[in-house]
Amino acid sequence: MTVTRLSPLDASFLAVETPNAHMHVGWAAVLEPPRDGARPSFEQLREHISRRLPRAPRYRQTLRSVPFGINAPVWVDDLDFDVARHVVRAKSDRLGEVVEQCMSKPLPRQRPLWQVWIADRLDDGRIGVVGKAHHCMVDGIAAVELGSLLLDPDPVPPPPPPDEWDPELPPSSPRLLGRALTDLARSQLDLAAIPARAAGSPRRALELVSRARRAVPALVDAARPARPAPQLNPPISPLRQLGLLARPIDDLTRIKRTFGVKLNDVLLAASAGGVRAFLRKHGESPIRLKTMVPVNVRGSNGLDELGNRISFMFVDLPCDEPNPVRRLREIHASTSDRKRAGKPEGADDVVRSLGFVPSPIQRMVSRLIASPRTFNLTVSNIPGPPEPLFMRGCRLVEAYPVVPLPDRHALSIGLTTVGDRAFFGLYADPESLPEIDGLAGEINEAIDELAELSPVIEQRQAILA
Picture 1 (cartoon, rainbow, N blue to C red):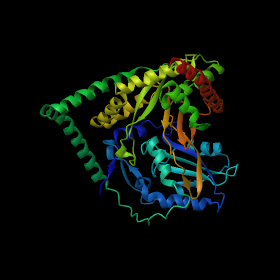
Picture 2: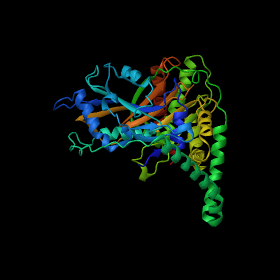
Picture 3: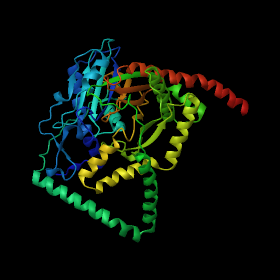
Picture 4: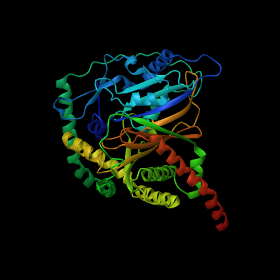
């Protein structure tokens, strides 16, 4: 049988997981029941998800470790797969409580690394769906794709094809060991062959030089130490909460157009303004926060791939700058410079090169990168579905992203879109940041501040034109 081994980046998310840092990505979604037609029960929704699993075979696979840990684990079929372990009924009718109950627990390593909690009747009459999947399995883009697997563009879709899944027996330990040694030897041969291939192909040599030039600045940027931020980088608990904020996407796109920046710059500027106000209200002096910003490097032909196809760049959030326009322009200049220098691609090359080093060194480097000495928080923009989507006739109306917290990181900020609405998910440790709703309010006000300045800037631009 063929087995798929975790990539160095996938394996890194296993390496940095601790009892207090659960490395799952996810979402909290709200669906509107059909106005005309029967409301689906929990059992019907679970059956719906079960019938969609053939679209994503990885969700019926589990990890198998290699003897002696000499190489990364591999994916094998779960012979005892039971959908009832993965699609569970929520014990609360409040979305926030469902998120806390779901996200505060790690995913068991001996089972497929995903779970969906369903509240078939929230306190407002709608349906809540909270899902999580381990980051070694999917990145944020692929997590959204998983949600899309469960959703349809039509309220009444055609029935899925029959499920003909027949699990394969996993390879024996000796075979796993032999394959691991073979893969290690092949990677070393590939590494040794690079100089010869470069010498035989001037084009390849130039490409290697170019990649090295962009990898070095990415390494230097990653090695630049983050300033201590006690409020955001304390020892954390295993508990989680999700602060929610929803805005019309037009509010953000108008700011983007007015100032000639990217949507991601608006997200970062709003985060900087919100965190600045939040820290000031809690008696902390705002400082520049080194922020990890994930960047999608998944090509158009890899949209359906699982695993991680993300890179990252580090941007300083100017939380010490009181002027919102200066914050936005500084962030735009910083992200533009990093993209022109190819730092996200350089970081991707660095991570891929970890495949040539022994597993213990890979794990050590992964923990160093995830350390608060490297960055203070994560801010991630995850594109969502622009078209209406349905689950058993129930329309998706809200979706809040969950961006995982490495150890000693108390906050991450995610943004996704559904139709014409933008949804912020502020994922936090409630023991370190108990007032997460207050931070959501501060980010909301930071957006208002930029939106209120937009007509002034537009008027000035019209006069100058």
